Length: 312
Image (cartoon, rainbow, N blue to C red; front, side, top):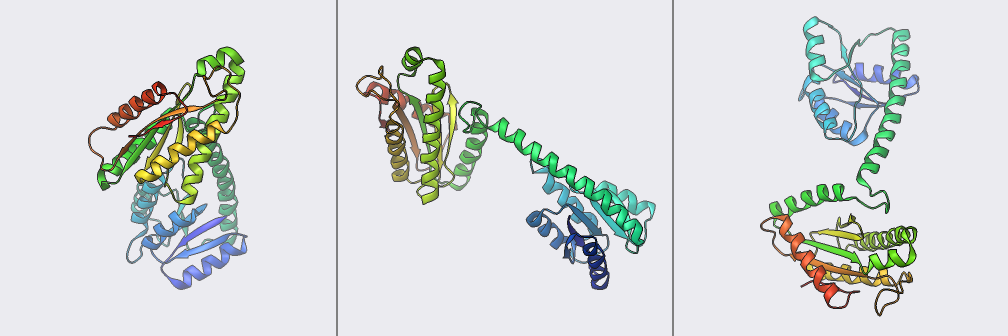
């Protein structure tokens, strides 16, 4: 197990760390509560041994801060055992209220320490399994079941965060609305299974193009999502207008170059997308207005022949 040992007395810390290491654990020592909180967030230990009385920040406050940090994570709970030479009733109550789970004497007998470690190892294994299961559940909740990219719910959450940041920092914000051209005709002609395959391929192409621009630094934290049906969206926080236009054009080209046959798609003969965009140098007003602007330009792209992006 990874154990964070929080103890300000060097002699006690060295001795306790040696005992825990001898039982096969990886031990990190923090000399006070402030260091402990920092190490906890950076290292993610399986177990914390926490002294109570320490300079800078005591064990009760450090525990409260650790629990507050864990509350911001999707799933987190780490056992915290207080190390004490005085297990008074007042200390026990305060420890539990601060978020601690148990008390242990600094001079605990070896056989008791070994028993505690066996119990904690079982808990650590359970935490790992639960954390993995929770991660999978979160992924399923945030991903569109058909295409594998972000779903509408997750898109709304991420977009609200990006919009709020743009408002606060007065940074640019860009948005693309995309629609697969003549998709109903595609479904009617090729069948719904082919339609699903088409949407998956288009979504993969859009997401790959967005990821490529993030990787090259042209955009930062841009992401693609399935908006609904054959519609997709790309949110582009903090991008320049040039990057916004380049990404939109790249997506149009990338989808067309997939070469998916579409006999009913007017002059193109392959699956294409139309894009409408909104670019705001300075964010004001409501996010919904940006979506309306991008949607109106998407309609223009359809009216002007499809397989194109209308961005200004």
